[in-house]
Amino acid sequence: MVRLIETDCTVTYEGRGSTFRDRGVRLLVIKDDKSFLVHKSTGVKPQNYMTNTISVEEDIDSDGHREIIVKSKTEEILVTMYEVMFDMSLPSMPIDKSKTVALGTEAQFQAWMTEPSRWTSIYGEDRLFVSREVDSGNGSMDLFGVKRDGSQVVVIELKRHSRKNDVFQVERYREALREQASTEEGFLAFKSMLIDKAVFNGMGGEVIEALEKISPESLENPDCWLVGSDMREDVDEFAGQHDIKAIAVGGGWIDQAVPDDLARKASTLSNGNSDVRAVDERNEMEFGGGPKSKAKAEKAQKERKTEGPSRSRSGKAKQTRSNEHGAGLFDF
Image (cartoon, rainbow, N blue to C red; front, side, top):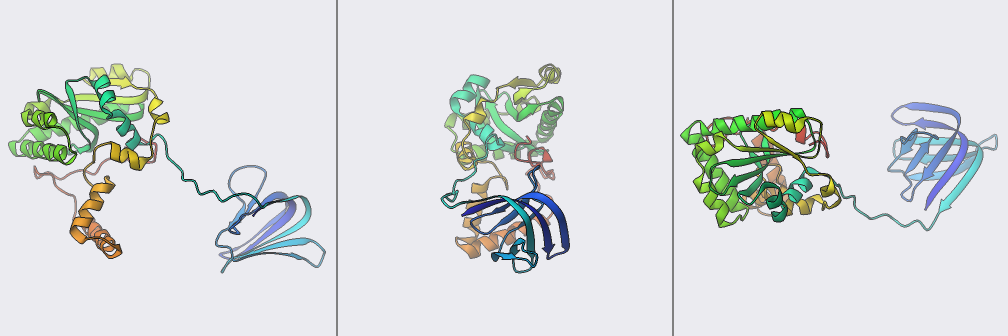
């Protein structure tokens, strides 16, 4: 039962500290689980609230005013009501067991962009999709592909709102790929990683064949794209000056988005900690199943973090991916 009370009241709190709110008209909310909130007429944040409530009791003080006493193990809220304008209970309100589905996430954008028909319609039949979240050596490239003849690799950065600064992010990836191609050891290690990734992702033989054809020149002159739902003014022209193709695909993908767990399955697996399934599979292989193995896996993961920066096959220390993709659910 959810109960709503509009009342002219004072509010006294005792617990981690002591506070007193003088008389004012407030809305009291008492929920099914006895969670208690005190709201004023504006804003979304309650003035007082209590979770893990043990009891909600009503009483009359010495002056004849109704009281509500809300208690947890260590806290107490006392509401003294001088006038009650509204008091209503909602006994038939069902429990909401629905789940929140985030729309417009990076994983969903990647899954939408890599649907075969859409990939071909945007990038053409001569470009083949290889994987998502490929480490360039200086950040993770959202989508990675290769031309059928192996003459170029394809680098695609996805953004909700493309800005001029995003052009420099794509340039960093291009410079990192050139560095990978600068030594035979670095190039062969990167090429081997791409083939391993394609095999792991179950890509077709034509993708493997194209990757087998790439040379250092394929990395030195990558085919770079900046793709956004929308694009700020002059971004396409600015990107063109840096030999980067910039396009806007609209926001229709948000309406067609699927939950993140399905988006991850729909898109190919990424490499490293950002891929939940790959991490789970690695932990299962190393530690077996069950709660104890999970604890062992978490311990091992902490130990990996304390070992210092990981290294690529070329022997160069990898840089941690910048925060543009980690700042928030929609900040990409």
